Image 1 (cartoon, rainbow over the protein chains, first blue to last red):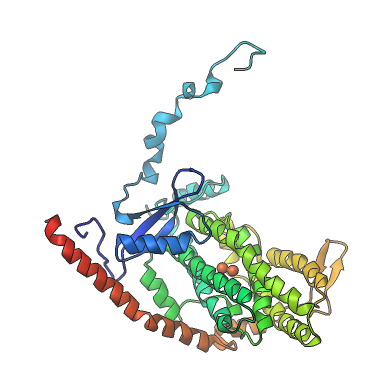
Image 2 (cartoon, protein in one colour):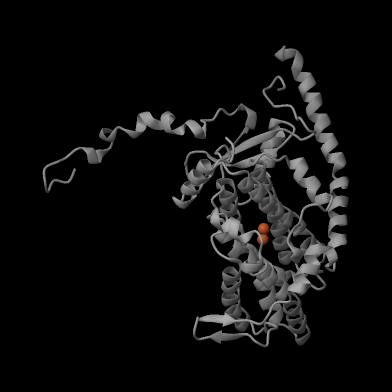
Length: 102
Length: 316
Ligand SMILES: [Fe+2]
Ligand SMILES: [Fe+2]
């Protein structure tokens, strides 16, 4: 890794950056794909040219791929388990008197 | 995890349940290999596909046509990049993929080994070649591998413009002078059969089809997709009074499909194996473009190195 957190190219290949774009109407950022670029500034320009040719975005984030920490699919069962056994977090869990719209 | 029978059963159950497979998920080695082959061929096809049309950018008949064609070719570059980045998630490097194309080790769609002789060919490519690509890519947008499916969704949004600009070129020529109409018809005659070949051999003769179908990469067979393309295109040809060059073309009341004549698979196989009209020229053009870009890559690396060096004392 370089000092700025950019992974150094290993095989003469420029570092990989993950691209996130925000659509024009206030939706959250969404992963679009990736680009190779020498630095953050050119990653941003490449991302614009590759992923936003038709006004798809009002903002772009580029993140060094190596800087992303991700959950592991093999452990996804136990990892997401705490959220899976709590039906009382959903409105359907609660009953209301017949005929009342709540 | 090795490719144990249990692991494969679990994997196939996930696909049967309609789950997408993501880069870090376990997958059979063979699934990974097939996807790398198929996705990289697809990416190479987008890249090489720029050449037949790029050939006409400076000779487009009007500024409107030139802008449209330029934008389309730029999209194809983008398509190549979407799919390369998807392929890289399977653990193969970009440099390696580019190398496979430039050394002739990897294949790309044979259609791009045919020449673009007149301006009408640009119309025929948009109408037929992108039209066929839409049929194929709409199916692939439901592929079991997430990054591939998502790249296809992105691509499909852009392809309709490609097809319509091509069809508009053809409709304009077909309604023009007798000479323009002849030119349009000639392009149709030359591009029709190679476009039907784009879907690949009949499924029973296609060695990879069964496996790709079983693993949900392909959701429909080559013949089914080809038939769909023919059914869609016949009415479009009739509407602009151009004739598809197939004496056997007729509606089949039993199936509701358009019956079409036999495809010359010997020609297909010749072109796939390197003996198409322009195989050598296409590869030479790609190699030239890659080496012409060397100074840009060098300059960008030098620029980044200089900035890293300048930033180093502050970071230390
Ligand atoms: Fe494309
Ligand atoms: Fe296209």
